[in-house]
Structure formats: structure tokens, C-alpha cells
Image (cartoon, rainbow, N blue to C red; front, side, top):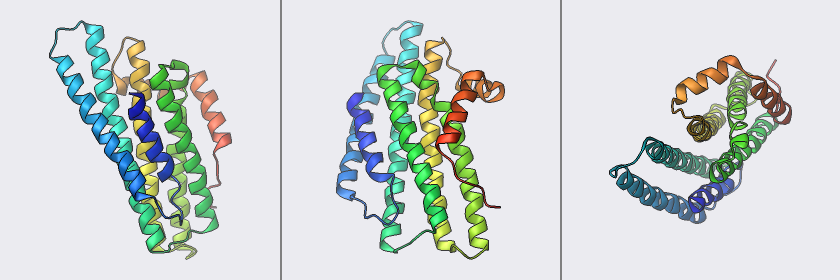
Length: 231
């Protein structure tokens, strides 16, 4: 599992900074191939385990890992999408406005943190760290929505072009999905240790209740990663 995670982290860290930087496709493609290999090997092994007689706890563990490797693989897929957008930015010599570049810088830093935090929590079974993931995912969603509205305003003001808007929104969509899959991994880890496996119920509960810990972490992330909404 550690090598699997390391491959995705390597893949994403090379890929998450796309602005006007030529991507390293060979290195990234090797990382993607490694992720596919690990997913296939782990998935095959876990399916074989499910055919064996296991108690409830063991079944839940296997289910957790099956869900998790799917989310890890999806993160890798979105990283590949980011690489393709990065290639387009470089080849078409697309330059963003200072405001758009700043928004992407903030989001990229937040994505790096949520990925690193999620993988560390999963590998080390660190529940305290896992509890910090969902508040950051929630704030990343808010940042992405604000960035989208800001970019619409820039296009309307003709300070950015439609072409810039297309690639900008592609990046935001992939960043959002990476954060979503990180949330899924953290939630699965938390629920299994709470003898539950209802992801939707857990997410609805913490997002509706907004308990003290969630609110505390959310405010921290809001302070750490921020940019202004267009007036």
C-alpha cells in the first residue's frame, strides 16, 4: 500500500503545478503505469480474499481497501487529466492573469496538503489526521466555486479569454475531484474505526452538524488558503 501511495504522490506532485511549465510526460506516465499495476494487483488479491470465509470485521477491512484503491486510482486519473491540461497550456502558450494565477497557486497548495494528509492518515491509520481531511475538502470546494465565479467576471470584463476560461475550469474540476476522493478515503478510515460504513450518512452528519473540531479546522484552512471574490 505504501508503494501504491508513493506512486500517486509522486505523480501528483509533479503534475499539480501546470502554469506555463512543460510537463514531464515520461516520468508521469511511469508513475501512472505503477499506479495501474498496484491497483490491479491489490484488487485481484482483495477479491480473492472476499471469496474466503471471513468474519464481519475482516469483510469490512477488505471492503475498505477495495473502496480505497478505487479512490487512489481515480486520483491518479485526475492527475493524468491535469497533465493533459498542462500540456495544452504549454503548447498553446496560454498565460493567465495575475488574479487567476494566484487563485490556482492557492488551490494547488491546498491540494498538495489534502493529498499528503490523506495518504499519511491512511498508511499510518491516523484517525486524528483523517478528521482534518473533510474540513479541507469542504473549503477547497468553496475556493473552486469562488474561482469559477471570479473567472466568469474576468471573461465578462475581457481581462481573460474564453480559451483561458476553458483550461482554468478544467483544472478546477480536476482539483475538486481529487479533493473528493481524498475525502472518501478519510471517511472510510474513520467509519471503519467507528464500526460503521455509511459514507453518505457520515458526510451528511458532519456537514450538517459542523461540530467544534470541524469548525476549528475549517477556519484554519480558510485562513491558510484564501483569495478574494470578485466584487
